[in-house]
Length: 139
Ligand SMILES: [Zn+2]
Ligand SMILES: [Zn+2]
Image (cartoon, rainbow, N blue to C red; front, side, top):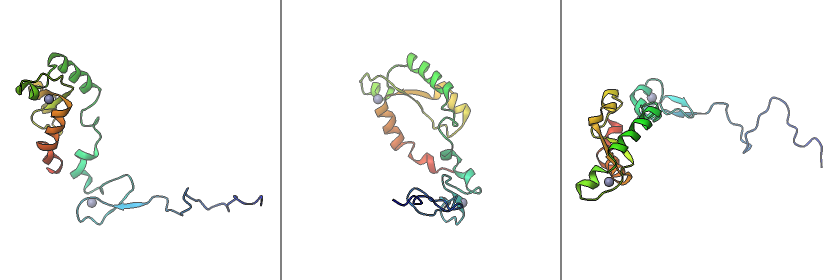
């Protein structure tokens, strides 16, 4: 075994797969037809970021924080059954507090209890798949 093996000249850096990658790889902005390059991990360039901030921000930033967890839990204690299942005469324990009118980041709508409804996971998923579908692209 050559003792020198494994020692690399200083100033050279190798990634795990041996490729010599640039320090900060860039990817194109995900906004349609935008030629701007952005650092990996970022989806949109500075110009388009505000247009997509709804999906960029994490759930907790949108208001789904500890207060929401606490308040929604309280709500479910008072309204323990899924309203959609109840309409069909089925009593299913609700596990999700859903916004009847999509709040789209509107804090007032978000915390308006009259806009809340208890749903079970299944009904909530079905609602998200259908009614809330267009929300993401409504900028
Ligand atoms: Zn862009
Ligand atoms: Zn249900």
